[in-house]
Amino acid sequence: MKFDAAVATDIGRVREGNEDAFLMESPLFAVADGMGGHLGGEVASQLALETLDVLFRHKRGTLADGVREANRAVFERSTRDAEVAGMGTTLTAAIAAGGQLRLAHVGDSRAYLLRDGELAMLTEDHTLVNKMVQTGEITRDEADVHPQRSVITRALGTEPDVQVDEAVIDLHGGDRVLLCTDGLTGMVTEDRIREILTETTGPRDAVDGLVRTALAEGGVDNVTVLLIDVLDDEPAAATGQGRGADGVGTETIVASGLDAGRPSGRTSASSRRAVPWRRIVLWGTGIVLVLAIAVVGVRAYVDTQWYVGVSSGRVAIYQGVPSRVLGFELDHVIVETSISATAAQQLPPFGQLTDGIPVEDRAGADEVVRQIEADLRAAELERQRQQEQEQRQQQKKQGNAG
Ligand code: MG
Image 1 (tube, rainbow, N blue to C red):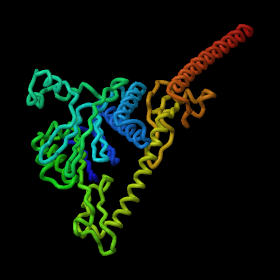
Image 2: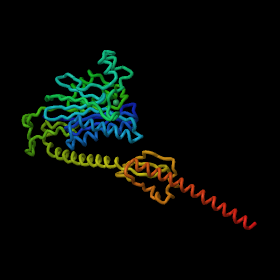
Image 3: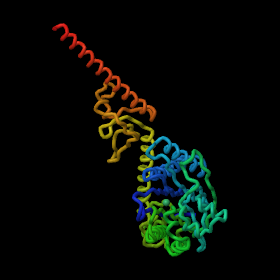
Image 4: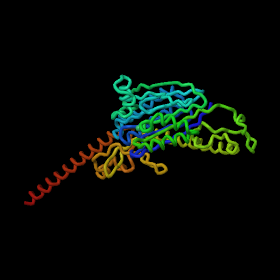
């Protein structure tokens, strides 16, 4: 069984940033919808997916274990970084392998299965309105337009532990698995989603069509759509077009996801190009993977680094390292104090403040700031003492002279 996947994300027509995130590292796929302010939302969804990805690549635990670990990562970051306090994210993740789809889910992003023209929802929304539907307070139609329909009852990062929904589904050839954020389902009816999935061929057409429709319907939220097509595992020769001019059999390029926008290679024209293309894609995938691992590694490292430096002429606590790579800053201000940097730099131990004073952790940074404050107070007292002494000597001299 092979998979062909594509993803599309759009900021929408109203929002100023895209707080959705996605992961397409076949066989692992996921979407996340961050919340908690512009910065918090982006950090939460990205951090959750990065954590999940790293654990998966190190083959640690089940998919649900990965989601619980992602919850802890977001929660910890949210409690120690005031800039993103209270952030959270939804997370709907899937592993497509061995004829099965494994799902792990928290929040109101969704997974759907299109099979034989029928669309089935595979996840349950962790929302207030869904609870009200279950208890019979309101109908499903009322839920769709309820003013509190976006209130979610379960998210990643808001508590130290989270309950994760899990499911396993047997896959058939021809199945289409859709992962999406509520930017799609809040705008487009399930009937319309089913139509688009039925009418389109290839995952790229489908995700583009879905996002276009969400935008046409108003696009009031970020929208992210990831589609996995399950292909029958037929041998290439069975298509009757399996051999190109170079005598090498057709290579149906699937499942990497990175090239999901291209034709599937089932025509004779594309099969002739299949081998060089495949090589390019493999190289491209390799380079992208190495870069991605480097970025994740650097970021993980940078997030553990702290220093005290200068921001807008004031002493400030930074997370990261005081340098930039390829134009990207590797640090950001966590706290800007009211202490003048010029005054602090005149204190002997803090002369290299502009270069940054590295510290172990956040507590170490606070300690340095306290030390600067104490030293400045001591220097000020010393200055006053000397002034008074000089005045006294002056008065004494004047007394002697008189
Ligand atoms: Mg959303």
